[in-house]
Image (cartoon, rainbow, N blue to C red; front, side):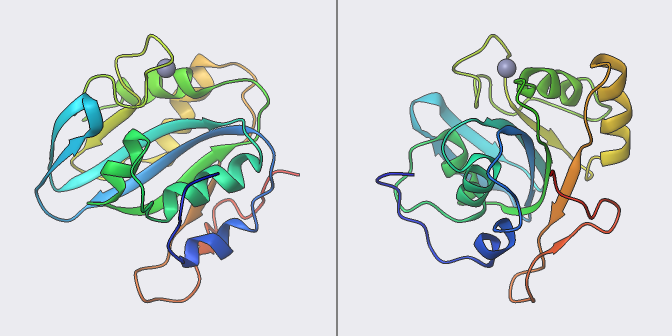
Length: 185
Ligand SMILES: [Zn+2]
């Protein structure tokens, strides 16, 4: 997080609940209106009303807590592809698993094959792998249960997938999804 200034966000206190273990996550972001955004050198992204899912992995200091908190806040200095998208969308949920194995490309593959998924910008978040993208667009909010079902067919023995939800802007603290109140221990 060196050199990155973060605005205060209630997401930060939420993420204090997450531990600092490594893992894989999917950030669900809501776009209320059509927008245009230049994603660094990657180019132009037409943001459509709907839901964006960004898949990443947390391997650095602070693990999942640090990485998801960083996305939840708005970076003052735009560095990662997600920083640009974050400016015009609102994170609503973080789905994550605490797993030392790198699962992000398997997760991306599952999202890509889900009904209604499209790839809004080739290369987004996938500079370090061979995936076409780690960003997906859905007109309707994707189902976490459907995602987990598909994930378990692809990755046998995959650990639990947890979920954190964000309270609406101006609301109280974000709360943990009631479906899955446990965090990784
Ligand atoms: Zn990948």
